[in-house]
Every structure is written in structure tokens, then in C-alpha cells.
Image (cartoon, rainbow, N blue to C red; front, side, top):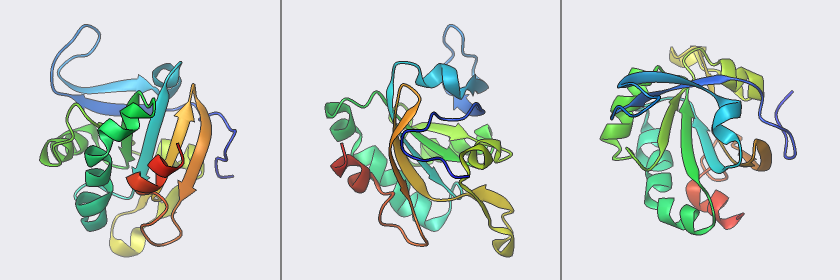
Length: 166
């Protein structure tokens, strides 16, 4: 069953490539429990099929990077990009997209979180295996407040669409 507005995010683990070592985070891939990360925060999350893919690289990530200040002005604490890739790839993609420090590039390496959301997709015909559907959502303290799942295009999940819902 797909996640719906009003649902709590499922339990899950995501990985992030940390560029600067801090207390509690080592340089390189770090894993985080989703429930711990969302406590008390308003987070704009967008999911997409894959790092370095055309629409994801040319439109989806850039839209959230460009609109980051507008999200913050609306009370959003963090922006996450979740993709079925490993943390090394997500870190490299974040650097290439100039998203470091703006959008948290979260890896869902085995699609476990996408599956828990009910937003996984079979991209086998493209040689990509199980991936994430393209979506955006607003989450407050772990509860889904807005949810926009694409049905084959790139309209409802873009940054501007989610921003207009805040």
C-alpha cells in the first residue's frame, strides 16, 4: 500500500555521504534512522529514479537547489533527495549538482525505503532494476502533510509544485 497524507513515515535507514567530519558523523557514508532524522522537523522530501539520469539531473534536483531559500522562508528545516543509489554516488551527484549543504542527498541503496513507502518501481526494462517512483512530499514530525506522486511525467513533484502547497 502506498503512503498517504496523514500517515507516519515508515521505519527505515538511509545513508548520506558526509563531506566534513563532525561529532557523531564520520567522513564518508553514514547511516541514519529516518525516525530520528524527522523528529520535530519540517522536511521537504523528493524521490527520483536515479542519480545522474536526465530529468533528475536537469530538472528535479536543480529545482530544489534553486528554491531552497523559498522553502526555508516557509519554515522547511531540511530538503532531502532520496534515490536508489549508494551513498558514494549520491555524494558525487550532490557535488556535481552544487547541492552540498543545501539538499541532503540520501541513499536508499537497496530500495528498502522506497518499498516501505509503496513508491518503488520496476525499471528493469531500462537495465536499472528496482528504483523509486518520482515524488515529492512535505513531512512534519514524521507525518506526511503533502504528497505528490508522478504518473509518468514531471509536473507534480517539482520543487515549484510542492512550494505552492506550503
